[in-house]
Image (cartoon, rainbow, N blue to C red; front, top):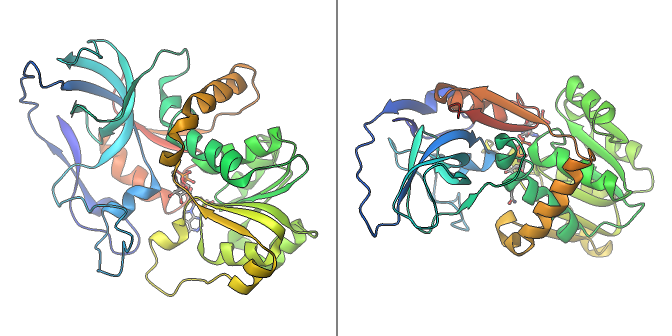
Amino acid sequence: NKFVAVKEYVHGQPSELNFEVKTAPLAITLKKGSNQIIVKNFYVSIDPYQINRIKAYSSSHNASGFSTQIGLGERVDAFGVGRVVASVNEEFKVGDLVAGLLNWEEYTVVQPGTILNKITDEFALSYHVGVLGPSGLTAYAGFYEVCKPKNGNTVFVSAASGSVGNLVGQFAKLSGCYVVGCAGNKNKVDLLKEKLGFDEAFNYKEEPDFKLALKRYFPDGIDIYFDNVGGEMLEAAIVNMKAFGRVALCGVISEYTSAGPRAAPNMLDVIYKRINIKGFLAYDYLHIYNEFISTTQDHLRHGRLQVLEDISEGIESVPTAFSGLFRGDNVGKKSVKISND
Ligand code: NDP
């Protein structure tokens, strides 16, 4: 069983050197009553949040204790999709297709209590790590439950060509909003406008002043900011928010790799404009999971949602796939195909 292990903790920007691909025999006999199953992994998800578990932490990091550091030499857990190849669990039979919490490895021994769902629909398996998986729920819950959109609202999305961002923009268009996204190169910007139906998009790396850029696209202000990046872009968005605007704090990827001082939104501005800023985790919205799945599947069946996927091949490509997220290499949901059916 090949697996990806943490070799060195990340200082600043992650690289391939932080990981190693190891091999260990899958020497386990499932005991009756243990409820364990073994899954052969087909796709594993590559997600920015994983960096927070493999950083070289100082005590000032991770103040909320939200993520536990993975030990050196240990495997990295990740959402994934696979097939049950052995089971002593009554709920799962050999041959079932499943999506849930696995590891960056070829086979995972899944312990009872781990999040794992059977896949029974007709969609591509890879969709279950993306549009029909955690990214989809994040975009759906964050946009509809946190941002509470109204027809005609002006919406700004950062990291808009990424896994979560592209779906937020598309949901916003389906809700009758005016949508502007930012992304890190021209191809991504073109894709947002030409393929995904964003009203406008811009390359933030070419903008000397984010506040002025947002003023250009939102002369009358922003109703909703879906924030995937934090930092300076959040500061600039706050300046451009309308009164009673909503900000969904989904992620702060620009801050995951920087050790320097952070941009600080003007909080007096937040007060005077009565802006609602809410941090959220997709995990908090499992109660709307069924609604999310049925609505999103319906959009997919009727061709109302475009699916953006970026899939690398083979377990050896996981370290490059992961570090690429922080260079902006990916377009849409990044995953690695570990094996064929
Ligand atoms: P993406 O697919 O968006 O991949 C990351 C993208 O972020 C890159 O492609 C890059 O695009 C952009 N990026 C990288 N570094 C920077 C930087 N320094 N400044 C600005 N943009 C940068 O990832 P996801 O869609 O999976 O995640 C998006 C955000 O949502 C992340 O912050 C993540 O942590 C968060 N998240 C939160 C969840 C929650 O429950 N709250 C759940 C899932 C994700 P570009 O070319 O545009 O720079």
